[in-house]
Image (tube, rainbow, N blue to C red; front, top):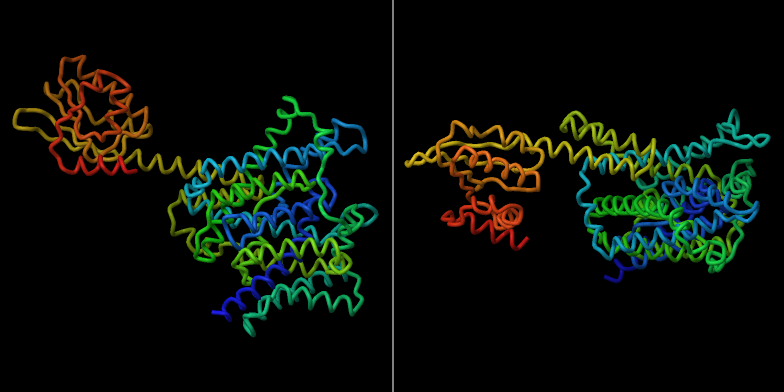
Length: 529
């Protein structure tokens, strides 16, 4: 038992250190995307990573500043800056205020226990999400193959391109073949160390973390502890106008952050064959963003790339995330010079291996085997994730899946017809009665040709929504208009309640003397649910 605990602790510590190294360039890059100082991204990565690792609902999941949020923040910061004087950086403070409001929204979702609705995300949407994110991560790394020439960003060429590609390939090769020799060694950390040592000893002129930051307009990684931003309350007025400005941004950021976090949580659940707690994760993400906004961070959410690096490196407990966050702060405070010497090629190689491990390659194999609608959803979510963002892609995928589901169920409504000894005609309804199936339901009846007594039996059906109630009301009215007597049988207690509440006409048509034992069982189950 002691050996197992020691082994687990070693795995978590080593994986946490690996993740911390990968967090640095990502946080810096996303800060540049959002148009803010690199330290704003690094402080967000530390604060969010630490808080979610301690209080989050998914041990082993890594959170920090992400590109999906940074893309939305660009216009927020730019528009905020335009409201103030030149050099005032008013957009930065509007960003902090928006992140705080974003966190409040996310925490509210968790307290209201709405995180469970992530279960409604179909598997094709999940696969499309994974594939789309893998492509986005891959495309984000291509920018590392550029250099600044006379203030212009250009693709690497000739010797520079060969050196960059060579070390990326070397990093990937070490990570691929090292586990074949010894699975206990942290392949990502060793790959970064080996490539860094070769470049430093050989004094090769390549892009490093330090030069990458300076090319982006930064001054380096030197910084201190996050400080409470008192200026937020001085520069951002507490008014309706401010809420109108930051409110939409906060809602969008909260939605993207929660969707990415909860879907990453589900993915890690599948990889580790364990189960996280979605509502707890929502609260932790919300609390983390509130605090990071107050202390000068750009906000963030779960990071699928770093989370997979952590899991693949052996990180399974909260220790790995805590180590990653603390190590990141240590790098910022004491080891910035060493971190600045790490070649970008090594980190790109690590991320490319993450892309390979993230992409659901099995989707190519099953694409022609699954229903056409599911294949359409999978491809659509992947494409929309790349073209727009995660929130739009996932919502679109869910809508498409829901419409397909509604259409398929609408075709399942059936009516079996027979006559009783006294001449009464019985319609036994099969399948769900809801907005999508009411037209097919109405077509089953022949009001003018039916006998004077009609029974509509719902023993194998269920009235699901207001459209179904309205269809029943109209049908009963038609029978009454031609002087015929209609009874509705075997409705669940919930359906009876809705019908009695909707119309006295429907209430009078309900047959309350039930002799079928299955009805009572179903009613009891409905009460329990």
